Structure formats: structure tokens, C-alpha cells
Amino acid sequence: MVSLLGLEKFAQDQLSQGHHTFRLFLITDDVVPLRLTLRLQEGFHSHDFHGEIIGEGSGVKKTVFSFVRDGVPFCSETVVLCSCGSDQFFAGDAESFIDDFCEEGVVVGCCASCENNQVILEYS
Ligand SMILES: [Zn+2]
Image (tube, rainbow, N blue to C red):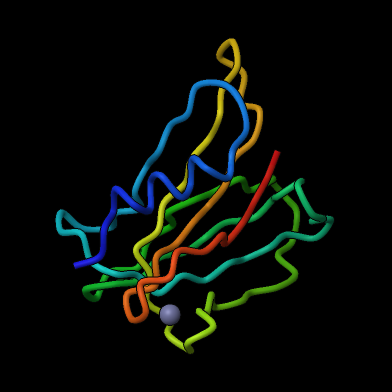
């Protein structure tokens, strides 16, 4: 079993200042690795994310992360892959807050195969 505490620390290490949160992506009551599909909307550019992440596992498919803008078409869809070739991740997002204002955030994943922690998405 991979260390989810390690993943939380890895996520928070990507963020600079402020109060940090962490949320593990869960689509069932059990913690299972997910296949993640990153769907971007038109107009996306680095650090200004709009789109969503779909998680699939245990026969369930759900949106686990979403900053969707109404009426904007989706322009790309990518399955997140580890450098080892696996598409199974324990994943979650962390955000840093200063005075209740979200400064920046990161989506991270721990590969279920090689257990490498990696940044999937950064936004601010
Ligand atoms: Zn891997």
C-alpha cells in the first residue's frame, strides 16, 4: 500500500505560503487507484486551468476535480500516464489559502505501480 500521507506531504511541498488543505480523490467508499482523464476547455493556458478531471475505478466513473466554465467547449482529453506506463493513480488536490483566499493549487498523484509521486496539474 502506498503512503497517502507521503502524497499529502508531496502536494503541500509544491505550495508556498499560507494554510494548506488536502483532499484525496475518492469515487467510492474505498481508497482505490483511479484512471484519470484530464479534459481541458478552450482557452486553457498554464496556471489558468479550466476543465475537469474524470476518475475511473471499481467500475465507477466520476468527476473528481472541476473548474468548468459554462458554455466553453472542451478541446482536449488526455489520460494521465506515469513515466512507467501505468495509468493508475492515488490522487488528490492541495490548495494554499491566505486570508481565506485561494492562492494556488496543485493536483498530485502517486502511481499505483511504481509509487512515484508526481504533479498532474498546477493552477493559481
Ligand atoms: Zn509509475
